[in-house]
Length: 531
Image 1 (cartoon, one colour):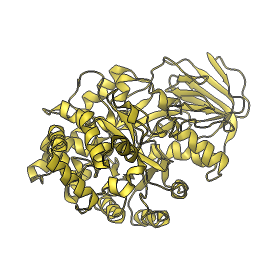
Image 2 (cartoon, one colour; image 1 turned 30 degrees about the vertical axis):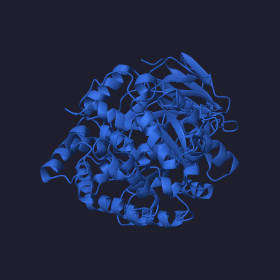
Image 3 (cartoon, helix red, strand yellow; image 1 turned 135 degrees about the horizontal axis):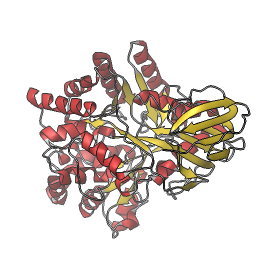
């Protein structure tokens, strides 16, 4: 039971977008019990914080995170709570850590290693409910919720196969989705550029998303294409929402590559048209011009259709490598994003590897590594994936700053990190939220302070259906951030990403300080949230 706390002399930003006001917040038993405008008389609070005019707002909600396994090795999730994140939404891009029934968890872990890393210990769960219990047993600093992943349920039924499912297969997958929703999943996610969800047709995706309808929970999607065919991909996603009546949430919206740059307003008009036709659509964004994912996503889709062992076997075979090289250089596969050719090898950097022997390549582009090894870029990709048993992350410089700003300015768009841990990560892992408040509020004046906070708090809470989060109101959860609007800043850069921010003084989760005076505490008050 949390001790009573009073935060006085605060500039209170309640998360709704309403103007800030000066006042006092009283916290007891993990809840906000009172909010007073102006000065209040002394109470018998055990802990008194004089905010000295600093801002106090709801804890930030990260609607796109990949800490599903990281929280078992670092229960504090220090890079997240230090930037004010008090709730994380796991199970992104179709990759949830459950359900996993009678499957090869080693193969699944290897397949996900470039995105999620590896578990520090044994997989002790099967159902999604078991996974949530394992999180609570671990004791963590932030709150977490999870989506149930399309790729995960497909893996349970079809493995990594690219074969079309039968009606019975679809039924089994639908049952797994429903079971996970009953166990508390806050929604359903897909990643239609990732194996095995990438092999699904629209009818399969629609049927699985339809399982959300009785629950009113969101369908969260990394759509099928963010490049040349983004318009068709958006149509597919929005039509599913119209057909099923379920809420939609678009993951890490971007217009990638030179062909689509400058077309944000066209995309925004599609969002508005969708809402006009009755589709409940929200969108998220990370405020950077580079993306980050696993290096295996460079490979043509067929290379991963038989599981990690066969993928590695393909990569070791000279004839198969030549086929991979031609698929990339000649654009031989319709509908595939072909990130290597599209982004350019000079714009793709290695962020993390598993072995010490290859750590020298972290932070270097594929083009640079190819020059240093006196080989070609496709050979570098294949060799690194072999040497690291697929556990390689990458960063892709593929956006323009003007597009990032135009997306951020839209009222439908909330903030998220999409951060991958390990090695030399994308700076968004350490600096997303402070960057918004420093670069785009204080310096560029793209957003007001109150609107920026809304995009980090009540808007993501509404998108994910987290009814007790995201707003400062008596009776709601005491997840709070105390920061100085004049000094808050990110210190994380592409060259030096593992840097904590400045200007965030205190962070509370469920009424307990997880950051006090800019230092991570030993408190682990976080909970696995369920619906």
